[in-house]
Length: 433
Image (cartoon, rainbow, N blue to C red):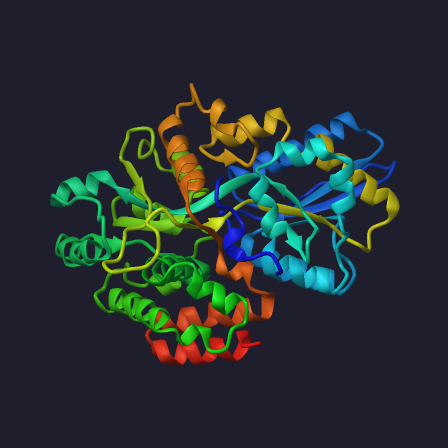
């Protein structure tokens, strides 16, 4: 990806939400397009609603939609694209995955289309185009919401043990034995999904060494993962594992099932580092946990002596829709009409805000007033817009092969089966230019 990952969003979220099972609907007889996206409420319902509204307004050019769980989708879409059988509209996270499609000529260049439809481009957060851009050209339509990663905590559990939210890494480590002695897991983690573990490293790399540390690895600089600040970050996360900071059995807990969220809202765990998309599912599934004011949230704590700006965040600067180069001209026209008239229409914008999300639409903050989630939305908007650097999630910034190696090694790091130095050696082998 030619656009620096740290430039993906500085003013406006690693992988995303999912659960449930695949579902689909047939295209209309008059021709149309196909669209694959992720399951998991509330996002799945909002995506389906946008397509349903478009289909109702365009009866002769329908979009057939199919939803997949997060991890299954990553495998399915890669296989379909490689076989030349991708859906017309490809949902994704931009970054390295998009670059791999571009390099293989599997998605269309949309630069001239955006030039001709400047009203569409002006509607969206300008910086959301960073992860949609490869070699100075736009290959995807930014959509949906900005999704920083934040530290959630259960206020009731904190009150129970007389603790305050950690403002520093040292304070967080000091809370670990306090919660463990009270029979409460300090931190919930769906470690089987691997990308959930990654969030801890993303923040530690940033807080200790600044965004330049991962940027160097992203750019393929020789032995970038062996940077002393990187080794310090890798060591600190293993210190947290060794201290029983994460719930026992975290390596067998999946994020797709939302089991990690349930541990937080049922009071079995005190904290959880996760994407802002989980707010909506905790609100819908957690009883009075959210509405009753029991959910706390904050940006990631500082690390004493660290070089990273405390305002920095990581996550998804948006989600992205590309058009398969293998689609017919008619299918591509349907997709572009959907981009112009269906994506982030007023109904969709309201729906995202109603679920506690910030859509990547300019002026979205003005629509927050009156929302029952106003405090949360102001917090998310503040984190995103106030971040000096908003880095894209590593597994989306890196190209797929390197990302898979990354996730495998992160799992091993958290299972204490490799050392920080071994992690660095393994990663240098796949990112060194």
